[in-house]
Length: 228
Image (cartoon, rainbow, N blue to C red):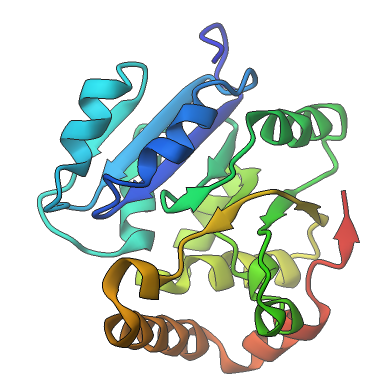
């Protein structure tokens, strides 16, 4: 991780991911192009924040007083983000590869006309590939800080961050690419149990759909078709 400049900042929202966040941070701290790593803990009850503090001293840790949601956690991290670009990363991933991240960040440095790159996830589920959830709702993406600030002005909340970012990119005719990553996420069912995981997934889809029903379908079929 670089310390001489502040071009790229990574923001990772965390909620009860003590058993998984290490998989992500072990790789993130090796990314050469990053100058700042911020973890925002949303009042976890499993010791996630203490785990990060004890094992990753190079990470800037923010502890939120209460759980407000993923979007709100990222907004909190943005208050101290110094980078021109923001790398967003979820905490519940495995198979993360720091070389892939550096490759994407290098591409952005060399091609400033790129406005955003989404890291599509590696998933064996056919339905996920068909509806493109592995891409358009991936929490792993890098974009300019100034664009993310504009997205927040549209007042997304909780799990609406990705669809809000996508809508902003479409509305403003931004240059968006995807990169096929090795990232694999843990389904909510594996963390919460089948029934509770299903309930949480339904809540998430409802929040996403309610943000912009028309844009939901537009993104599913037409958004982000260019591979990096």
